[in-house]
Amino acid sequence: MDINREDYELGLPIIEKAGVAHKIDFREGPALPLLDQLIQDENKKGAYDFVFVDADKENYLNYHKRVIELVRIGGLIGYNNTLWFGSVAAPPNAPLMDMEDIRHYRPFVLELNKALAIDPRIVICQLPVGDGITICRRIS
Ligand SMILES: C[S@@+](CC[C@H](N)C(=O)[O-])C[C@H]1O[C@@H](n2cnc3c(N)ncnc32)[C@H](O)[C@@H]1O
Image (cartoon, rainbow, N blue to C red; front, side):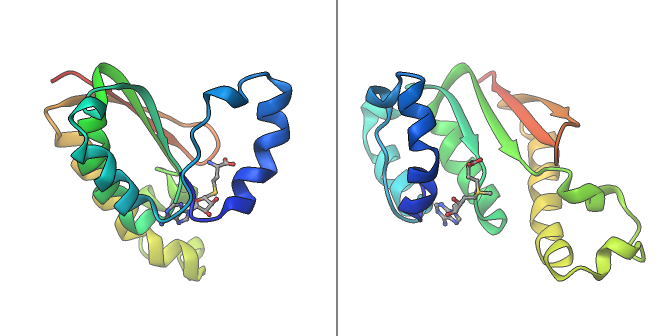
């Protein structure tokens, strides 16, 4: 899923070169209504092995509420940017807080991180690579 087809097409040559294009069912549009459509379909619930979320940070928690229903028990969900350039652990007066994007999205990433940490349906692992990826394994 991506709101922007051009972003998907950017990676498509690599997907084709890897010989896996036939596995892609690309959906263009905002992810929230697309996910809502998917969870209406009982056959899609618990049907996915792995979901990777790397889109608008404002909606990460909304994505989690839906994606948790789609991934199977034992399956994985990855959330990108969960360190948000280190800002999630930085003091409010750290120089990086002067950057508009960092300041704006930080509360959403913090909200997600806190919600994941106490969600009894998953166990989580924070990978401090790149901008931080939280891997969640659904356990119930
Ligand atoms: C940082 S890019 C990551 C793309 C991909 N994961 C990659 O690594 O190539 C973020 C993507 O989220 C998409 N995006 C932003 N808001 C979205 C939304 N509401 N619904 C679906 N996709 C969205 C953007 O179009 C963009 O392609």
